[in-house]
Amino acid sequence: MSNIKDNIVSIKKVMEEAAVRAGRNPDELLLIAVTKTRSPEEINMAIAAGITDVGENKVQEILDKYEKVDPVRWHMIGHLQTNKVKYIIDKVSLIHSVDSIRLAREIDKRAAQHNKVMDILIQVNAAEEESKFGIRTEETGQMVREILESCPNVRIRGLMSIAPFEDDPEKVRGYFKEMAELYHEYRAIEHERLDFRYLSMGMSNDFPVAIEEGANAVRIGTSIFGERNYNQ
Ligand SMILES: *Cc1c(COP(=O)(O)O)cnc(C)c1O
Image (cartoon, rainbow, N blue to C red):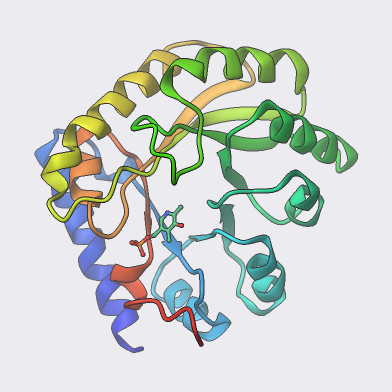
């Protein structure tokens, strides 16, 4: 477990190098430590090693760990059921996995009850994989319009995507490039509640390529904490 710190240091170095290769400023990259299945003790070690943002993919795990983890920004990165929004609306700083207008409206309603504006990302499944959540690329425009029209307490901060898994990340370079093009299209628009800042893509196996192609928020679990054991 003492590896956590070393892993974070070396991941940050790889991130920096990828940014420099792409002619980008490493300071604009956000490392989100994905803490699913990890104990509060492990998470606190990561925080002690400089992690400022953690990502969970289940509401229940956020609730179980929230009080036991040192101050940090929480990200909801997994599929979110509308009936569970109310449990995390006051706990997370960014919801990455908005994939339906119904979910956006529920987030809007709960955010209004807390007098806040919730930052979200729209999850895009550009490869249209059956096994993954997210809207299709061409649905992005309509989703953005509907949220701006009907969700005054929601602010769209960017896009999230999970690339198809490939042993060789070079094979998904084109996927990341496509996502970056979509991101820059909307980033160019000026609107109070359409304020793009995050292109969340890249995981342990593919984050250097994702950064080279334009990702500025990477979600990394295994390379920080080791392989997950779901049977614990
Ligand atoms: C688990 C998970 C990650 C991290 O994956 P690793 O391969 O462990 O780095 C990133 N994003 C999402 C949405 C996840 O569920």
